[in-house]
Amino acid sequence: MRIGVSIIVLGLGLSAATGWTQQRHPEVTVQDPFIELHTGPGRGYPIFYVAERGETVTVLRRRTDWFQIEIPRGERGWVHLEQMARTLDPDGEAFEVPGFSLEDYTDRRWEVGMQYGDFGGANVISAFGGYGVTENLQLELWVGQALGRFSNSNMLNVNISHLMFPDKRVTPIFTLGAGTINTSPKATLVATNDRQDAMALAGLGVRTYLTRRFVFRTEYKAYVVFTSRDDNEEVREWKAGFSFFF
Amino acid sequence: MESRFLVLFLMAITALGLGACSRQRAVAADESGQPPVIEPEVHRREIEQARIDTEDFEVGVYAGQLSVEDFGVNSVVGAHFTYHVTEGFFVDVSGGRSDTERTSFERLSGAAQLLTDSEREYSYYNLSLGYNILPGESFIGRNRALNTALYVIGGVGKTDFAGDDRFTLNVGIGFRLMPLDWLAVHADLRDYIYDIDLLGQEKTSHNLEARIGVSFFF
Image (cartoon, rainbow over all chains, first blue to last red; front, side, top):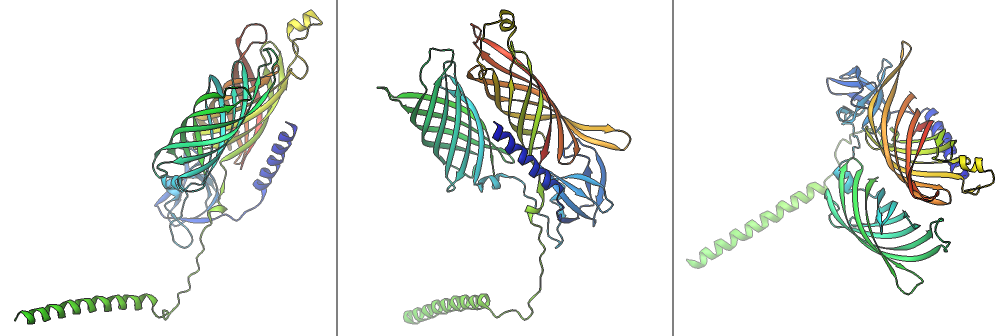
């Protein structure tokens, strides 16, 4: 915990430092009759100024779909991505704004997500990171924590997922994986030992591209836990959650 | 007569074939072509996207008071990491810790101890989804307007308390004030909800947290 806090404090220091360093910012020329400067990065913030056609403005920073610009008279405001896309860079070419579209989603390599669901009657919280090895195959590392009435489990799995239609908005996913599960019974029960077992899984899911970097993913997984007892344990899991691609 | 037609036909086909070949050759010659007489000197000054500082991430720390049901009101500290997906939605990972005090029963009875010292430590993590319901501006004096947002947030997580990990729901409301473009001050109210069977029968416990924090966009 203490290490975690110190890392975060260090991170704060670094991010603050980047906030103070002076950078050379890109400049673009307004091509529309005018572009609207909002007071904040959101559609509800009022328009307080406009930059006219032919004016050169400096792009300071971007937050979600909004760009903070500075006009030659010194005013600073936020411009929406749609209007930024109609400005010109110094060569007279259209300013290329990386939005996040279905095409970007198709080209994605990295995916990070969180899910919540039911793991054999227990609440399960999972997080994963995935890397697209090919267009269809994704290698994923999952960590999960199942919190039940009688026991809690921590899981670590490596999965390989097959995306059937990686370029479509909705695609089925098939998953195979293996990992370990560490189960500890609740403290209020009769003291039993923690146990660690190997596990394997097969899964079926649906992944839907929502908007920008947002992906909705729902999955059903069947686990086999290789216990040290005579019988292996079978657990069914349902979960759903959001992920983001980069 | 027939043979003459045949000859003409063959000649026509040969001529067509030769024509096609020579056209292909002509195209090939153009492509491999001589260097242009004038080499245009074009200096492209393209804007590298990386130079636009994208600030969709936010990291921050907070401190406040956490009311743990039956175990008093105690100070809490924590940290959070937020990713702003759109101007409305954001996802948040947060974690905090607190030390709880003795219950009234433990105090009155004197000797009886429900929990050991390590079990009295309270820590949690949460994965939540938030939405800025009321973005706006606040005015300080005549000349300054600061961007603000009132947001609602909710999610799932884990609380480690009284010797067990407990599945925890959280709901809350918060206010973000931005004195600088990259600096935010937060005031948050959260309710952490979990089932606990420590005092005999299982019950749902609500644990309210009030906190203020500071965060940086990067």
